[in-house]
Structures are given as C-alpha cells and as structure tokens.
Image (cartoon, rainbow, N blue to C red; front, side, top):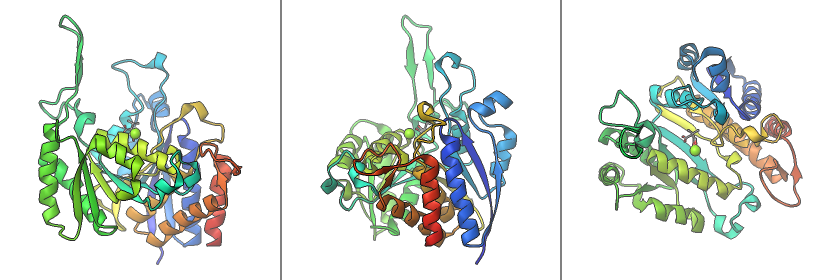
Length: 372
Ligand code: IPM
Ligand code: MG
C-alpha cells in the first residue's frame, strides 16, 4: 500500500546539512522504490535561523514542523565563543523548544554495533550487543530554567560574597511514568528486559523514579526489570553490554550514557535517535529524528562526516512516524550491507578498510537499497 506523508527537514549547523542531505536522499529513494509520496519542506534552524530571523527557530518554521508527520533534524550548535552572550540567542534553543513544545518526552537511541572492529572494545565484549536507550527528554536538569515551572531555578547568583550557581533536578510522577511506560512497551516487543538507571542512593528524584518504575512494572508481568545505579551502569556498558535490552533513564544520565554507549559501535557518528511524544500521525507517532553526534564544526563541509547516524534516523522516521516497517528494515539492511562490504567513513578507525566520504557512503546505501 502506498503512503502519503509530509516531512520537514531542519538541517541546521556544522555537518548537519551534509549528513541530512544523505538521509533525505535515502528517504527519496525509499519513496521511489516503494511508491510512496513524500512532501518535503525545508526550514532554518540554529545559526542560520539566528542570522536570518533572530531566533534559533522561528514560529513559522515551528508551524511547518507542526503540520508534518515527522521532522528530520541535522544538528545545531557551534556558536563561536566570541559571539556568545548570556542573554543572546543560542542555536541549541531550537532543540529545546522543539522537544518541549511538541512534548517529546521519550528519546529512543538504539545501539547496535555493526563495524565491531572499529570499537575500542575487544570484539568478544561486544558479542550479542543490541540495546536501546529510552532517555527522558522533556524534564530534569535541562529544564530547570523554565519560568513556567515554579520553584525550578537555574541561574548564576552574583550578589553574595562569592558567585554561586544552581540547577534544579525536578520530576513529577507523571513525567516519570509516561517515559517508563514507553520503555516497558518497547521492551515487550524486544527481549522483554528493562533496566532503569538512577542514583537512588543520593537523589530524591531517583527514589521517586524507582517507585514509579516498580508500579509500572506490575502492569507488565511478562517484562523483567531491574534498577541500576548510574555509575554502575556506566561500567556495565563497557564490561558486559549484552546484559542490556532496554535502558530507561532521566535526561542528563541518558545524555551522558548514550555518548558512552556510542563507542560500542566505534563512533558517535553511527547512532540515530527518535524523539516521540503522544501525538499520533496517520501511520504512527509524530516525531523528530536526529543523529546524536551534533554539529562537529571542525569537520563541516569536508565530506568527512559519517552519515550513518542520520540515515538510520531516517529509518526510525519511516518506522515510527510513517508506519513503514518494511521500508525501515530495508534501509537498516542496506546500511549493514555497505558496512559488511568494508566501507567506512574516517571516524571508524579500522585498518584494511576502504575509507570513503559522506556522499559516497550515502550513495552506496542507496545502491544497496535499490538492489534489495
Ligand atoms: C544530545 C545533545 C544535546 C543534549 C545538546 C546539543 C544540547 O548532546 O541530543 O544528546 O544534551 O540533549
Ligand atoms: Mg548528547
């Protein structure tokens, strides 16, 4: 059956445009190969939006996203230090606005090592590794500054004898429950194991987190669950990553642990993500899809960035927002095939492999897709 869908592309800063272009070309190849009709809009976000419109994302661009089934996002960031002003617009604000106003509380970050020899871990440690993070994305320390939430300060105070700074880690039961429910539902369709990560030996927010996890777990008797302290999890991710199936955790822990986990795949350039909330589309859930790597301004424009994280994000878009499961799997298999054939972007340090650029990696994935 052929589908119609509207996708807004926000390529953003640094390497964002290069990797997003390859992800979009893969989506267009899927459109043609499987006879769908995708309407694509482009919008400014990050530094270009600040330069042209004075804000990291304008209301008009935001509305374009709101009218779509999904947002394909590149990266934002890289404002030169000399141009940073405490009260000035920052490119990252675009992400925070999109995450908050669209209610994207669940950030899925699957980790599957494909190019195992590129990982700093010995291959035997990686055996059987196939896990997914469900990172809470709309609350916690990241949103301590929101005026709309009383009693959540995030500020630097300079009126005392010495400067002090404060951030607030606050979670409501409801904010915990909805992301934990999402994690259990995802686990039910996988290996049926949830690891909830917190710091309950120190933080009140983590004590509440555990209570909610235990309560939600009672609704999912077929899914096993465990609690793990975040420091222990950081260690276990390296020692026995195959122990994990679904890891659910609060915003900042998830930010840190997913960068760590990306090394299981050899490069942060390999990891995709999906940000989801509650809004439905014709085929699934409205969502935002981005590689986790960020803008990497040092290599921007050099055809060196790894587009795999962006392309796998496009696969997640097909699956979660458009309900195109076969197409999503075809994209993932095409990526696996190109990696199996030995092609690597320069970030995947491995001897004896053919190093190719961003564009060639994208083209090879499209060729593999066409052959499938
Ligand atoms: C991520 C990024 C962002 C975050 C930055 C760019 C604010 O690191 O998506 O993981 O911390 O959430
Ligand atoms: Mg991060």
